[in-house]
Image (cartoon, rainbow, N blue to C red; front, side, top):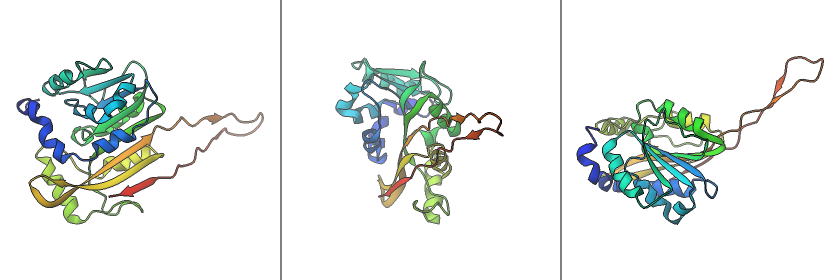
Length: 242
């Protein structure tokens, strides 16, 4: 709050030029007509604008954030939108009353200290088959899995240090965990220009995944041995680089 209160009114102006991929994220979110969506770390509610006319098809969207000064701006944005609700709460612990259709993080996961708890909480509130979407900065592992972007030493050193001053943590671990928890997903890896740093481009990703259905247990036949577990298999991973 001490960091964001003085800049709450102009918080989105610089971020608009830096945070690429939010429109792509929102465009790819899947939810049924009248569905319930949650944005964790929603800040000022700026990302509502990327829904365009689709926002009218949303039954309810909860904007969850811990920062009161940013939520003042979010409440103004939500004032004429009866399907938008602003919630002052911790993204790691807040839960809706009922499971939801879609949860997304837009450049918030890298600012949440206990990001593993935030991912677990997001998955816990999703219906089976629901959509989890993330767009955020990152750096790759030194030797990433085949088919994924590999960043050089300079990229893996420069950007974590540069963003650390603003409370943003860049690492490969979030993307790795997301891919593990969401076997069915689409991943796009890109780089974006950085204002005032000519020629430099920071890596970011857009990931859309589907919460797995719980694997059903197949009862053993009478008189046989231990029960067998149905193997759901692993869905193909779709990856694109920009």
